[in-house]
Image: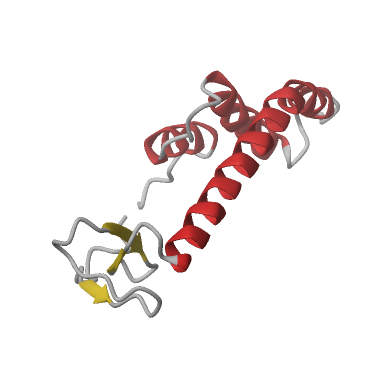
Length: 138
């Protein structure tokens, strides 16, 4: 498996703020963002800059929304997980979907074991290999 960003050169862009015209070194505030192309964009602002104020408001609103979504998901997950187990129990073992159901149950359980993190690619690979063993090339 290859890293989708391995061949992309990292670049850094310094962009002038159109509102405050701040520059590095003046005790101003720097914001950084990373785009899909892995380029880092650096913008300097004064503390009173309207663009910087809007960025802070949007960042705080986004953080609050994520906290609300996380709290709701943590409350709802156990019941959804239980419904998944009940639905999976209704699938006969000789059904063509049985290996897919078993893999899904394992993947969801791996996530349930550590709600605060994502299931890593090695864990996904281990679970999928266990449920869908690689075929010999011969």
